[in-house]
Length: 94
Image (cartoon, rainbow, N blue to C red; front, side, top):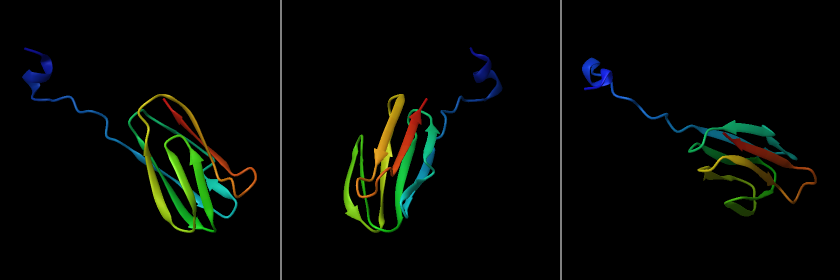
């Protein structure tokens, strides 16, 4: 019998975290986030017209709304709005 069973403690998996990246003006905010594998990022339109191009996210130009992406593999994922030069963000999954 394990010590966890004897003490009544049960191991709990890490809770899934959802981070938000806002598309507003001519930038993403924040420009970079670091999350754990299994976490989510919610892209939220909050001003102006933007599209979203990147892994598992291809959203046509819109002025409001959200798009949520779940990241299941480690790596660095880059997203951009092609309507605005240099409008990029990065999601690093550890």
